[in-house]
Image (tube, rainbow, N blue to C red; front, side, top):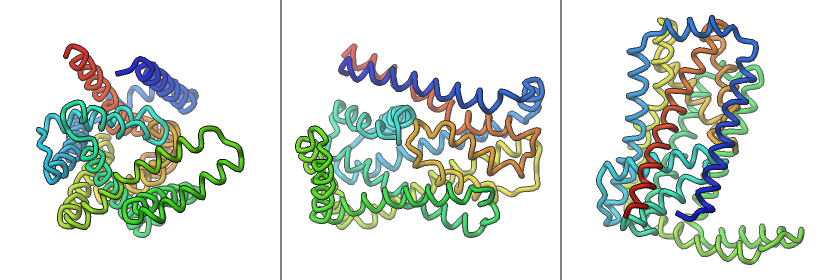
Length: 337
């Protein structure tokens, strides 16, 4: 790996840690720490382990889906390799704005380990497209059924989240299925950039247009492998269901029984689609604040802070740390080679 990439990674990780520190200082600065410690100590650890297990299943299903798509493209990788790429992608997605760093690094390592770059890109594009379709549909359906959760201004965050995710999916679909229309949009955008005298517009435009071939290959894949694309969506559906079920086990760890798994699943679906498009590393700050807003009527003031800590650690921070270990081990392995 190039030294400037390593320096940028260290910088992004430092910003990531700084955002975490600032977020939790602002949230807990007036909290009774002893009360928080008692809340965390009193929860049922078995349910938390079940939540961790579901999160591992979440990563396993993503790896399994990418592995299956690659197999259709003629690439054979093991599930262990697929998991490694998934964790690497997760780490870099977590520490970069708008999760922009994950896929390029995954493709880089796949290519280093004899997976064609075009096939790696195509597999990740198909997975991402499936993920967007599933999370948007689930978010909208759950919001319609549980419209009472969209209160105290949260509805505006939800609308922004759905809109941004839908725009991203639409742009992806346009790039995949209509290369000509995409070229027209790109040319128009870069005319605006030139009007405002932005630098290196021609070079950037050339780079973007050259990448359209990869999207075009995706459209060919989808047309020729419709069943495989549907299977990808179904596998992602299972993957997302594992993730959205985690808050229920955190909820049960406190001995609470009022809300069903289906209700907690729906709330998490609404929360995820609302914050996932926020262009901050790991949506740090926004995710925690949104959690406190949407779950406050469920946990009450006493348990809310502890519930947010446990939920975020199980569903995010622990796996960022695991992903970091995978990244370090993989980098050392490639340097030794």
